[in-house]
Length: 490
Image 1 (cartoon, one colour):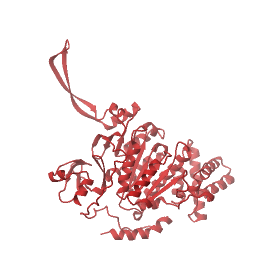
Image 2 (cartoon, helix red, strand yellow):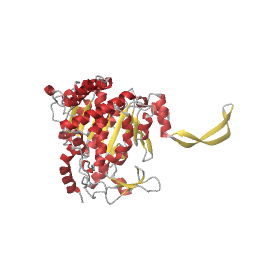
Image 3 (cartoon, one colour):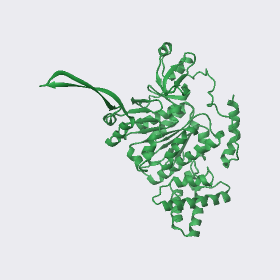
Image 4 (cartoon, one colour):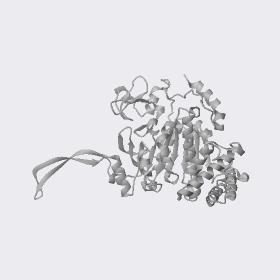
């Protein structure tokens, strides 16, 4: 049993017997010979000490990445065909095998990734945890109502930030119209309404006021309500999706798995709007998990967004530095830094600065390769020079100290398929890395030994709500969550 835990951590029996020291996380690592525990000491003056156990980290080849590091989010960048999807699959499968939940937003429009995920969760006994949102496969898709979760103010923010506005005046007019519409619906519908109800409310407001801005907002959301996603939103009763309704609150609370199929090539505008709506709801859930600890458990929850630039918004960059405390591990993948600059001039820098784990695959754009090389920094090296005369050395030489890129631009441009630069900011780690290929993932065959008790602060907290929550869904779940908390509390 004990050897199984060390095998899971990538440590051999010989390493255990020799008491070898490795590099992990924030600095030096001491391998305990009493129990399979890795203690990582803080980089500066050893002030920060935390425990990384097999269930609190993943291993990719020789890399061991603690969940604590991924809670500060992961940035994956690389040209088409460089290996981003394979890496996402590896990270995801490690999470799912450990019982974690995940939301995967996939813009490719094919069934390959979903098919592999569906097969994998079947092999680990989690087939019932997997849910699909897909307008291309309505008979398999669940229903999701974007108006279900949140009060009037939160729904206003969700829909406002999911759209792109060129005119600040139009954006402010839409903000006011959405707030009035949601306030009216909350009074008349008792908090239970759909996207079609919102459209009807805006239609009445547009007729009453005659304002062109409200008409524009009405047409925008009416197109969305009548799109191919109408059966998913529940706005088309004749062709409702084949599965029952899901809630992102339930998905995250129960550590289940949601795969969102959003083909951006065939249906760019529609898919981008829906992707932004889902990310806005994730942001809403992040705030709720902080206000109401009873809806959050101790296990981190993963969010994977491929082609992130298609769904990004300025508000999401601000959210990144707050997502860690709500237990979300966010993974953003896209092709170039130029993609992010389309959101705003500062957006790329915000994303780079608010992520901790980075996998940088081949960059074909020289400017992007140069940017990453500068971002990874330089190191001091000694350069030797020698004097020659008529092609022969004279014996005169000199040494000088120079600064060289730790990872040069040419190295980044010449990376092969599956090769990347791995950077862990909190661990001061920077190296070239080859992502294990498809099919290389193996589920641990032996159950990890339980030789320790729960760590302080990691066990599910036994907490009661100190204020009246406005969310009907939360109230429905509180009692069941509290009873589970009591079972695991010391």
